[in-house]
Amino acid sequence: MKYIIIIALLILTNCSQKRNFGKHKHFSKGTMRPYNVRGKRYYPTYVNVGDTKRGIASWYGRGFHGKKTSSGEYYNMHFNTAAHKTLPMNTMVKVTNLRNHKSTIVRINDRGPFIRGRIIDCSYRAGKDIGLNFSGIAKVEIEVLGFAGNVAPKSRIHKITQQPTNPQRRVIISNFAIQVGAFRLLNGANIYKHKFNKLDNYYNTIVKDFRDKDGLYRVWITGFGSEDEAQDFREKYKLYNSFIISN
Image (tube, one colour):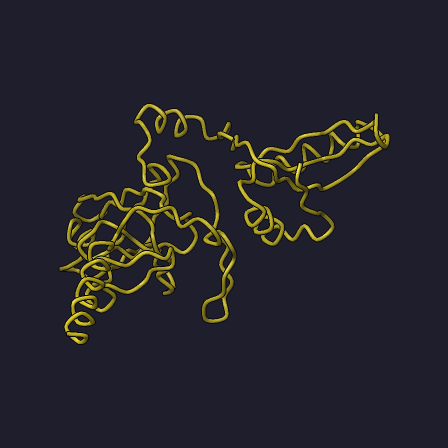
């Protein structure tokens, strides 16, 4: 009887794992941290809806089916997912085969492909949608459609595409920022604000007035959802003289 119960539990566990393949969870912690593969360092980067890029796409299938992806979920070759070296996890991307003009929409849940010239590694299902199951690789265009597993409305995509010189900065309520400078004079603080606002369009640099406390204007880079995200930013831009604050 004891062995029958153990076997039954193993069967139930296996079935449960199969049902969990491809669940759209937000495995965000740590997925924006820089990482090393084959001696090269990669920096996951935030992007805007409407951003496009061209390169070579490939696909991966049965040999990885059921194995954990970089996001922490299990890879399912029959779901429309893909691997990208730097896009945030759960970014929604349109992949268009430039030879046959077939397209598919995928969700980024893994890292790769780590082969020179390749920009995206599609699941078997997504690759089949655009004909990669016949050619193996193809030149494609990828377009960012949304984040956190959601596709943005077409009107928003059009707006950002038509106004690339005025990208939407990240607005988020959080307790974390990076202090990059402190000045006695407002002019010096504003110069730093302008400098760091051009560093990364995804975040917003502000000047905080602390004259009633220590007589200083402080320059903060804001918009970080966590301390890990702020630390990733410091490492990416080598801001070694800065520090993270909880406000």
